Image 1 (cartoon, one colour):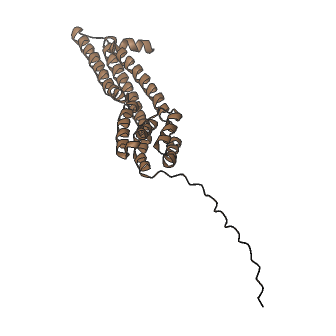
Image 2: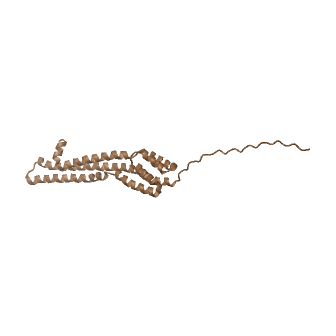
Image 3: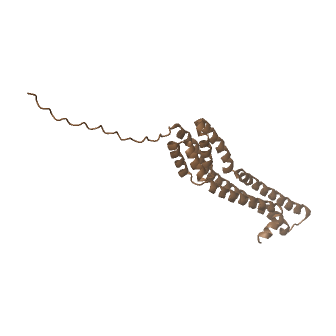
Length: 231
């Protein structure tokens, strides 16, 4: 029995499970690629921004972040905090909190859909199991001596749908947990920026060192010859 024969034996509900499995695979791959782009290491950018904030102020650090062109959560939170740094650490903290909430939507998008698929797939499989068992009992009620072939149709439908529902649920559950761990690692970089940037703003900006001017030498006085004694 090939895959097509199994699909025919399982009934129309199996096609719903196949469509759900394709959606789970597509969503998992799409979210993995997005998280890989957002998971670029921002440590070098954070260190450059910290050094520029200490040397030249937050506006210089903001220009450095803009020039980097990074569109990752850590850079977005850093950009939001530096843009409000002139108003004080409290305003910068509020801006970073708002930016982090917005970035959470990007990082954890699609995970709830995978969780829903992991819950719905076994229920669809159970529904297929019930439908298959009902068909088997209808064979019993309509035939005095049902043959094994007549009974096998309902039983195979029940078992195939159960297995398909469990497979889809397992794939969705594993993908959801793996993507959540990846999103947590991306969020850790943004959290680092939110925790460290206020302390940068509390440090005074280093003033440029004044040039040292040479002290002019005192003019030399002429040496007077000793006068002779008068007689």
